[in-house]
Amino acid sequence: MSEIEDDGGPPAVRARGVSVTRGEAEVLHGIDLDVTRGSVVGLLGPSGSGKTTLLRSIVGVQEHVTGTLEVLGRPAGAPSLRRRVGYATQAASVYEDLTVEENLRYFARLLGADAAAVARTLDRVGLAGERGRLVRTLSGGQRGRVSLGVALVGSPDLLVLDEPTVGLDPVLREELWGLFGSLADGGTTLLVSSHVMDEAMRCDRLLLLRSGRLLRECTPAELLAETGAADAEQAFLTLIERTTAEGRVAS
Ligand SMILES: Nc1ncnc2c1ncn2[C@@H]1O[C@H](COP(=O)(O)OP(=O)(O)OP(=O)(O)O)[C@@H](O)[C@H]1O
Image 1: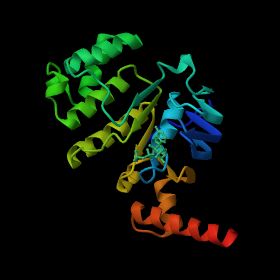
Image 2: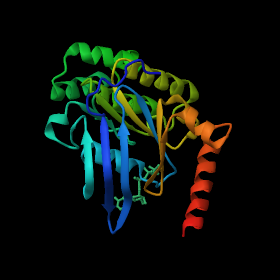
Image 3: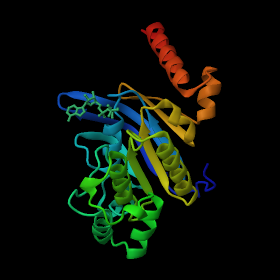
């Protein structure tokens, strides 16, 4: 998908032995991973496997993170990363009583982006025709795209998206994946979580998470080849069965 190769700089994300405790429990256990720049990387795993926790750690808003976690060569959450990392949470985080354009203008100003960035972002997320509407009058899918626009408007180097396609119809999902690919072609790194396994095939690389552990880091083609499965969902299940069986043998 992406034509931009790593130019030898630091990876977009580098994790070594990252563990996270939430409440009383450790929910991520010693994650090691590298996210190559200029690619679309899918973070996939069942509900509760730790995807949101990992993304929150990467954008620097998660407490009780141990190990080494670097983003664009700097410690996750460093102030200098604020404008270089865009984050869209699962729930649309936008102002309901502002219009679509006012939301984007507000966040653009905070990030030091200009009016051209607002206009470009409205086009990119397919909301130019809705620019004057109050966010509270929009559909769920449209709100999600405003939230994506907010994450995009500062032209971040790393865009972290937590389940951006939930609740979208197949046409919009297709359009969004097209947008992700074109952003990656322009050099942006996208880290996109999903529990919809068929979306895995749209990614350049995959991080498969299960029960707070990284099960595999591979391309979609490698995942299918390794498991001999016909689709990503089946491949993931096969991997889980194998790792469970290996665990039984080892213990
Ligand atoms: N605020 C919290 N306090 C304590 N534990 C939490 C909290 N939020 C999440 N957890 C726990 O952390 C683990 C990982 O949750 P996380 O939300 O990261 O998973 P997820 O893969 O993003 O799930 P989903 O796909 O359902 O959003 C789960 O066991 C969850 O119960």
